[in-house]
Length: 152
Image (tube, rainbow, N blue to C red):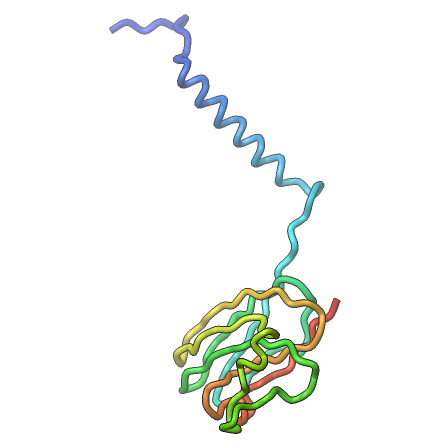
C-alpha cells in the first residue's frame, strides 16, 4: 500500500466536515446575549398533606412549572382553577367542587398521586386569582385548597 502526502481529500469527507463546521457555527451564533430571549419559566414547589396544600401565595404571570410533592398518607390530585375570589361551586354532595362548572377556568390538573410521590405540571398563568385544590371526596371541604395571586 502506498500513501502520498499530496493526495486530495475525498469529496464526501470534505462535505461532511464542511457541514459539521456550519452546524457548529450556527449553534454558537445562538449563544450570545443579543437577539431574542426565551421566556423564563418560574418554578413553584407545592406540598400536599392530609388535608393541606402548602404553596406560595403569589407568582409572576407566564410559564410556571409546579413541582408537587405528596407528603401525606393518602393519594392527592392537584387542580388549578382561575377564581374570582369567591367560593367555588360545590356538587350536590356538598363535599367536592363541581368540576364541570369550573372546567372552562381550569389552567391545569394532575391526576391523583401516590403518597411520597413527586409530579410536575407546566401551566401558563395570566394575571389574576387562582386556586390550587385537591377535589377528592371530602379533601376540598377539609381545607385542601390554597389561593394563588398571579401578578404582572
